[in-house]
Image 1 (cartoon, one colour):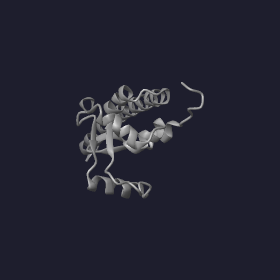
Image 2 (cartoon, rainbow, N blue to C red):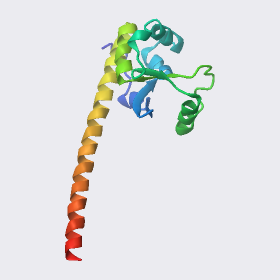
Image 3 (cartoon, rainbow, N blue to C red):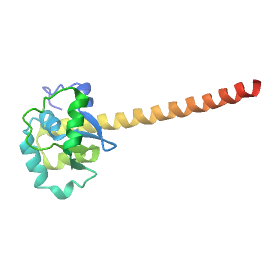
Image 4 (cartoon, rainbow, N blue to C red):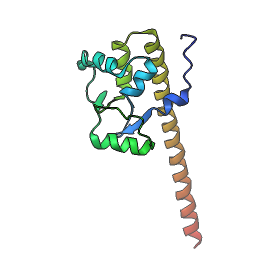
Length: 147
């Protein structure tokens, strides 16, 4: 990994959004991390559309985009003329096959590792919730037994 690439994990994590029940990253954010323009990123994708089925990449609707801006409390997308594209974890992985700079490859590896960590944390969270629910059920049964 190149020495000058010091993007904190939190920066990448804050660029992952939940849209259409999928964890995704927007084209604008990915292009900044990769050090390319959003236009060039999208051109590379359009030249390779077959690699990006709808579960890898989709374009946000007007409503989704407005909701995203509202959730973030910012209008930093100010000059956006086109609705952004959202890339799932698989879409981000596929980007490494169409953008071949060293920086894009290094950032791509980091993003994929973060997606994997988030998935592991979610599974751990589900396990904890399940155990808590089981304890709660046992407690309720015990309380009902003595009432």
